[in-house]
Image 1: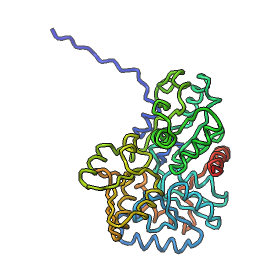
Image 2: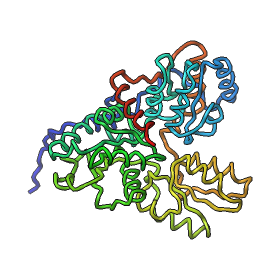
Image 3: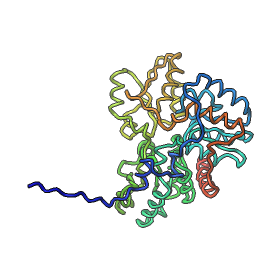
Image 4: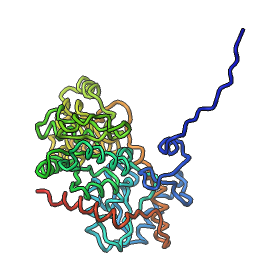
Length: 395
């Protein structure tokens, strides 16, 4: 005899994160941003380049366009300056006559520009949905809970937070409020050296790989000195003893682009291109960094290729837009530049800033309509600026 049972509804409540991923809720503080208002020009419009030029010319000195290295070529063409996130934020602060700072990058970068520029300047992000998955991996609520865990373990007083530039304004503010500093991939070692002069331990946010690579590769620590705090597990998935024994408490975050590279990628490119130099970003996994010949920030990668001899061969482990641009630039100098992995690896959120969004932004500003302004509240700004100023004061 067959028994038929009636399924009972499960009493399961979806989490806020699940609702956000399903598109049923919005988080105004999330790096994912919100939908971009207004009608964008068609991507197939043959007049997009001419329209961008005309709008930029009409705005004149009122607009200053920043282009991150990972942006599309079609956007970089209109950038007044290019660089990494911190360089661009400083460039904006050094241009006080510009009323509008159009940041072609992602959300946390525009926040940093707003923090460092004057109140009279307005920072604009062409697409509010251009966020950063790494920055999204550490929310203010999660980090506050982590600090409670460290307090209960009796080590919060001996712990100094160090946050990567690739973090939200809220996380930068937390860092400033708790006596910490910000770092870039260029000065992470200096930031950690400073932090260990202030305390016995470091809470490194939000990129585990940069923290681990800097501690082990550059400062001589062991992997056993590092523990990984997972905000999705009770107490971060760690015991109080593990936290007390650790020197580096690494947040469980990573870059979705740099995290794709593997040791197999390194071995494969060496087999395909004899004599190749493997150069990777320190956001890559520790085993990839250990297998590479050179490791450095975006600016380091560019300078290394500029100084490389003609005829040299390079496999680069960073975002594809930049690698492709470098390959085209140095081909005339007989330098072979290839992408480290076989698969295409664009930063999807960086690529949200395209020519239609830029044209829409510039034309709106030229018509006197302020769109997509990024504003950090004053309290958050003050503590975040404190953390940034500590970084600027590093030797």
